Length: 200
Image (cartoon, rainbow, N blue to C red; front, side, top):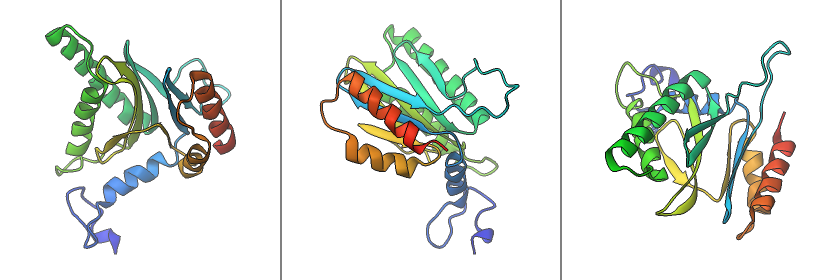
């Protein structure tokens, strides 16, 4: 039944689903795991680094990116899609700084990126970005923050979350083990535990 409705991103199925967006989320489910854990002292991002070949240069990272001095992100999904959005995020952060002479608020930056992602689900001739992000940062408005975004353009703030392969198993561990008022070392231990138990 889905075959008639999955050829374009702008066509809803009778159940109200956009299959192309669901396929993008499926692609993220095959990527390496990323975990984010919020604490009062900071945010921990951890990622599984899959080495496809022993000949590959291992010093290069394709899971963690610095956006600005106060914002970093972890990526799960299609790296080429992520690179486009990472570059846009960096440019947006610098334009904001140039205009207002202060660092960009974390959520405002994420809104700009998610607006772009949502646009790619709405117009014909485009496909959704097959990438999810965990954004971690600090600003003077809300302090430390952790956000997750998905290919549909939705985003939300989290205390602890996971994206990529085995994210459901990782989420269940986080639900059971996360406690309010974690210090940074506890957050680091929790992220390490989740990755070690959910990596393939």
